[in-house]
Length: 137
Image (tube, rainbow, N blue to C red):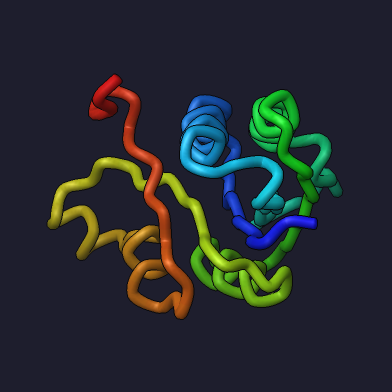
């Protein structure tokens, strides 16, 4: 049984989900960590389910290929930051992994930042997946 649980909060973006899944795979041992891939539907008039989201499937595929036990968890009707924080609590996550888009300080003030809200509000450690152009490979 895993010692820790990591919540990987993915959007609809396949590339971001790939980066997050690869980061978790690089940093953690699959025998010690179980992963919850979370997606929040802010609006879902089509009635989509978490398995319909390509980014979720992409993250899950990478994580499972690397030996991780993966659980899916979906929420809906909440703001992204609230959904992530609630999901982390509901799934008893030890750490939250999110992807932070590059945004100017003015953009953050005007439009808010999910990453900033999660970082400032989470009682859990938050792991920020770097944008691919900033990774030191």
